[in-house]
Picture 1 (cartoon, helix red, strand yellow):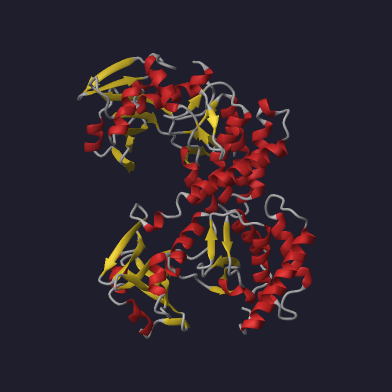
Picture 2 (tube, rainbow, N blue to C red):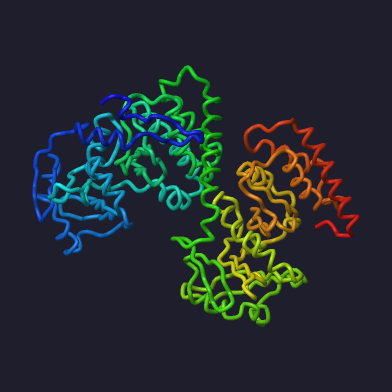
Length: 572
């Protein structure tokens, strides 16, 4: 088929992958793109099945209803758009994907293009022809009607392969510690070679996250990757660098937050070595382009999720009990809410509650919530009303409690460590939000930052925070805890997200932290310099040079000290 109808057409400004999938799929309906002869066509129970030659060695004819009835089929994934069954047969184990119509828009798509199951069926066979490992299709089916409707795809299970997402999050961390470095190196090299082969073969997956890859670790120790979820795969000529960068950017969004720079560098070296169409380009320049495009793409993704914790969706819900209104996470047990919401102020007077702070502005207590799933260690913070107009201010702009609630989830979205917020609510008086309450998970076995200075991870973490468009305007030692030697941000009222953090603001926040350690002998000048150099080296190059940063931080520190001296407030 012509390149213009099959390959990725353009890259958006954020480096994301866009194209004309509806148009190309429409052409495939008019002219069967990649159509391959199947051996048999079977009509059974109102469904028409198209079977490959390999299917006859697995089953005579698909019978999903019987497989479900006799317990052979087990649901492994379910959502409004699809149900995936794992079916264990005497001859083999297979997966059956049931693609459903979820509304008028989905129905209209089925009118204009082939059924989703057919698209995935054809794409899997085309990928095999191009030497790209993908799931083996056995059959696809649709309802026996001229009108579009549900469709089905049957594939052979990869018996020794598991989801790459599951492997990265569960299997690899539990492997012997001395084996993990070698496993990470092999994964990085193997994955780079696999994606390079895809792009050289003219294949781009528009949703290339870790969950859409299977990984198999055979006896020879070389990981093998298999592509799944293929209905929207683009197949055409060798990808240009612009198209490759767009696909790599989407792929890198998940890994940039979770994988070390060394492992990402190994991946890139392997990818570049196998991309023959890019041999004349600068490897370092192209790598920087991917990293920068990934960060821009992630920033846009995070910005779109900032307000979801204020709504009702699969992760959050709103609550209302008498005069209390607010937001909670979906998985907080109802029993915990029943113990808390009737009178949250009573919690602070219980004998088994540990008061962490009791001042004019706020009261903070740590205690244990008893839930059906077991005890839950939490912290409850009450923000007090000090002046008559504060409820009015809380109505006109987000209250400190709501800002902390949103910022907590925003930081966690950005892979920045902070206690998980569980609930945020206010007591309403005369229709206005008065006292606010914030419930968060307790940071276990935490100690103050000044008990373990210097911390090697802290400068890299602060650099990551700034690079991810997060500004902590109260970045003092008291607002950073250490959990098993790793820093954790707390007290997020002063956090601002979504804007690029410039040179002056970065220096101001580093100076605020520096001012927490001005006691003679607490932190040496050499340690401060190593901290700054580590901060500057933890990402792409920042301008100006380190001496200008050192001088500006010194000026900002002196200004902070003078400001506190005039107000009579001690430096914390």
